Image (cartoon, rainbow, N blue to C red; front, side, top):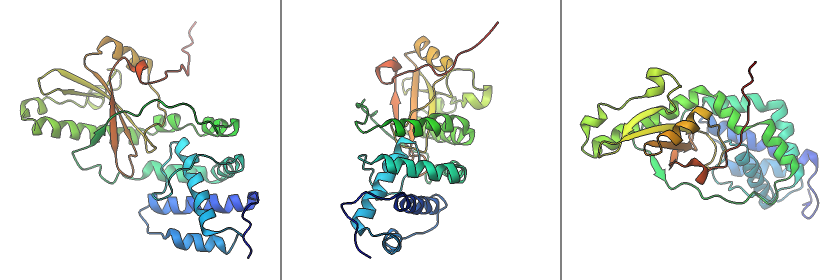
Length: 277
């Protein structure tokens, strides 16, 4: 089969690439072994593209899924300069198969969720919008809104809070404050979601540390929902409020912390209105 390098990818070729990527991703999420080289060789027998060309396209798929707040395949570093045809291919696949892959990602267990320590790094810097963010991509993101998916996934949120609770306990005990560790409270579990934060912890000097946890299986820049109650509480207790963003939760839970004013770090856009008579 001759190499069609230099020519546009056909819809059939794109569909095969996308389906192959999601097949590997399903194996990854399910803890089943797979071989990327073998997948590549099998594709080369179906389409007239080189190994490098296929790898490049797989990296493009990673870039699209990253924007959708979904897990990606290690080794396929997201390459953002993709054509609308690839966005169309991902949309076609998700329209037909989306529910199973989303359900698989939602149900996957974090690989280090039982480890009490959590890597917490600096928050990401604000970056300009991707220059190649086309209307097709924006529409796809709206259709499979990552913030809405994470908000609906209560189990993901609870697991994230559990990881942070254990991390805070470990941090206090390691800092010699067993007395404060005993006062640690998982507020959303004990009293519900109305407090404006999920976990009551403490700094080592005893000051309040009131943590709102936001968890995603996607990368660090995945958008999320912030309730008006949470936003307002952050302005009432800027000294104590901490927003802890957990990301890459399935593969390797990592986090960064934001302190008020949240508008210094985030673009807050109203999404709903409360209607009354």
